[in-house]
Image (cartoon, rainbow, N blue to C red; front, side, top):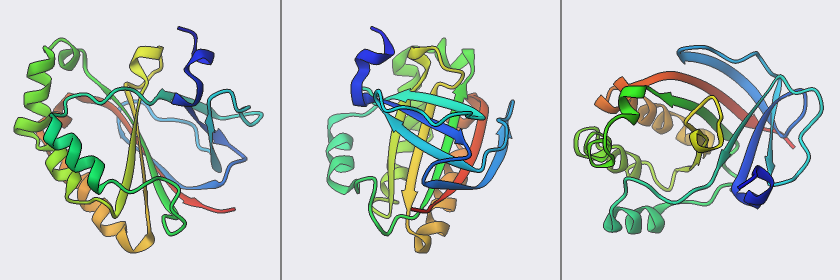
Length: 188
């Protein structure tokens, strides 16, 4: 399947000089970084990308993975939609995991993801204050495995920071070999 056939499931984050999201910081957490950019545009499907980008990160909305039915139901009930007017802050956190992670079976990854790291249980604690969307990039040949996108209101900044600190201390994060933390503010 070509990328154009993915329709609105394909999302591109384009770092450059245009876009409604102004970059507050691009911080290297692990591995190689990205060039600095002033703004980030979020383009869906075949929407044209801004000219002269510093970088483009693409991902696809895919089926839910590593989640059991009761967890999925709880996430669905509590999740806030993206694009809320009060959620003027965002974080784009591209992540790549090690070959050791991908060499594990899906059951082994699920055990680390939720059984040991409590990724879902921790994330649910911050809903609906922090809206989130995961984009899969590994299957479309991108340099990251996942693009994690979060939106939240300024009054929930500390809650978001707590969530990020908590997840980065888990066993799951020992398998991350590249991570960049891009913080943004929405400006019309």
